[in-house]
Image (cartoon, rainbow, N blue to C red):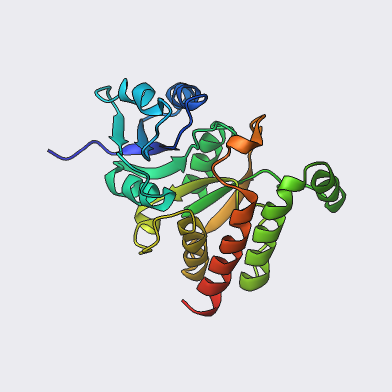
Length: 237
């Protein structure tokens, strides 16, 4: 029997997020959108996250995968694309930094404009002065400005924030084949999405960074292999 087609899969990737994983699931459950499913893939957490996630294993409209070891963020995204029964997928990071309600706005925009990808930008409609002030007050945004600026320079695009939240039309994006399974997958995917001329737009998303930035899985030094990956995909691949 064919599975019932959903509108959106809320995909929650997790790795050692015991402090926020329950909150991220609760947010997904409360999201007011018709016909949704929740996909959670845990990458071998050792802090108790899997115990929280496992409570939902047999719940309706949940698809749960608990891995024994960390196979990489990219591997999780590819598997989520594969097992989703929906038209679209929204990546809801388990640290809860991005406003999940943006998924509703992304869905409406994708449907009305027949988009393949919608980026949730923390900086949309920011003036230059506001961006400079933000960077001065929060130097952690340097990576966002560098990565987004590099995509704009190489591909003649005008994105404001490619690091923010992500919303994909599954049938369009899962055709893109990428071997990488680690965090570089995300930068390869964006490069190929742009190269393949998929239809992309941005919407503003609210963002509340976690208080203790040392607990983030993505570190500042990841900026350098990300730059390498973007250049490589433009100039070589």
